[in-house]
Image 1 (cartoon, rainbow, N blue to C red):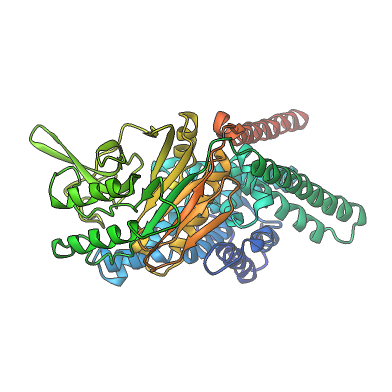
Image 2 (cartoon, rainbow, N blue to C red):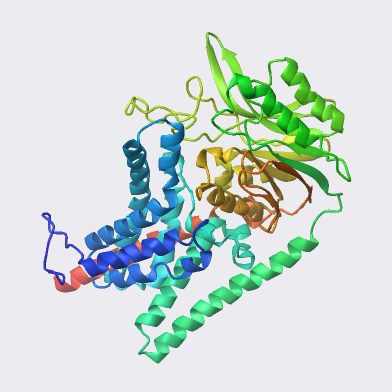
Length: 526
């Protein structure tokens, strides 16, 4: 069997021709342009069309190559900022930074490659790809989000963070359901275009795509209205988000510690019409160990006392365990009296940033943050108690993991606080991408999310996913926002990724169906 060029790999896998490779790259470009800051989520609804066209009459081996090309193209565009982090803060040469970015992009592209191969495999066995494609995508996206500590950065569904009626279904399915929906519509649209000469098929495909969108958006509009009306009777909490905009290059320099504290103190004490009930500083806003009682410690405690407010801020912490000292990336909660009311230690650490996985296999890899050894992990996602309210803390990277926010909701958190330091990313697309993912934690659990970032983007994300007050990149300032409380639990917060488990079952059943049909076919041939 030969393709249009007639060429083969050494092991017999057919090489797609240049036209198909360009189509795969086109899908990759459209996927990249579906995410902020360079693109628009509307493109996600058509991004698979070029790849689907390229996959016609292909073998699974060819599908793997085309999927790999599409994935590489997309992820190089999405993850280019990895190079900037490695070079600017890892102090490594550009070739090493580019290699690190390509390595990560290549790993993420394996899932796109497997997706394309699986679509071809099922299609060649006469299962409609509009049925199989969304199931395969959802299962592979879930695998990517959990294998090797998980890396769900900009899963497909996150591209829709600005389209509120579409994303409300995440309170049932999580972000994976939105990804499923996008791939389903892509497949139906492609089916309509491919079979446009067959009016019956064309009409059915268009009607199916339209019907699915109407159902999802109808549910979305209902939930938007319901969320607007379902805030509890409790008075909203006035929260002051503080964005210090501290330069990362001097953040940990002892000479600038006082200046950093003075900046945050001045912003926290700024006069306003009403006093804040809670003041939030970003991740590691305190540039030393707060647990060490000294003048800086007392100055920060004085901010809480002076405002009569609760106060949450990031600071490194440590524990002595015999001869060793274990470091933590922590958040401290101060009571209005200035005393420590609680501490949260980060649970989900950044690989190669806060710890080095597989160190014995990669002993040459240095971390990209200052620290003594790997950071320790906290005991779990347990809310901090603040008077009559309970808040869940997500430090930086933890905001992209649905499980963390869901655990907080199940333990009775009344709202979430995401403290982060995105100064590492400069003016790249990463801070915008990071914000887009945090939106889903609000929708999935129907909780307001207060986001305080050192250099931005600080924002209030309401329980319906809408972004209210926000402070843009590299601005120093503060904003008072009103946090509302919602008592209802969502299907997602109760049952988690049940939707993905259904997709896994569907994938198994489709595979069993193929095996049974093959066995029957073999019997007939005997």
